[in-house]
Length: 298
Image (cartoon, rainbow, N blue to C red; front, side, top):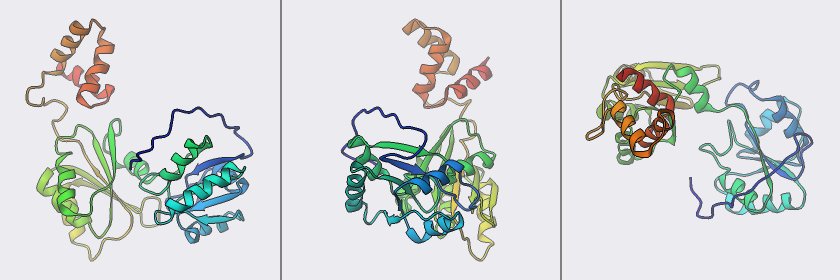
């Protein structure tokens, strides 16, 4: 998500206690209501207003913890008008907590416009960390998490979706996406067609909820498993493993790791550590991944 009006470089200091005029970005559970921090509960109790993606959904959480703070709706269909209204309230001294139906606001959810507006008006923006579906799925997937890329929701139209999958065909990192349950079979069929039936993938479904499930394996196998079911329900995180051999194989015209590292050291007159950092940036991989490639080349 982008905004043509980028906020200016700012600095803020916010007291750790007793919410003052500020926007609090509060993570809420993605399923299990126990997955909320003590700090988040305190902030939700103490702020003047809670801006919710869906007030009915948030009310379930508030009722569970006996929180009576006033709520208002803030979602993709009203944020153009509601964001300025909320910013004005904060300028007049109000403290507001922004929440979505689940997880961290702003991650494939409404929030960016209000956050940008608050920063532009020098209103403190305070993150209250917590649950995130893609991070929970990633760490339990069994796929490498030292280098990954989160791509949000895959495009709903097949042509755009296939183009997105083509772009990760030779990816040297774990790719993470959200996908709708009614499209997952089509998406998996595209993965098999474009990335191959042997590509390692993980389907994380209903994470932290009663019917939590992780399907790990080759793309072709996972597709057949889901095709055998009557229906596929629930929120889904799709994880695609890095291309096999992507660490050891070099791209066309790309020098081997050790050779390129020595070139950088000589050309820029820097030591191996600094050269390794530049090489990692050049190839779009993490420094630790570049180091492992170097070790394998010895």
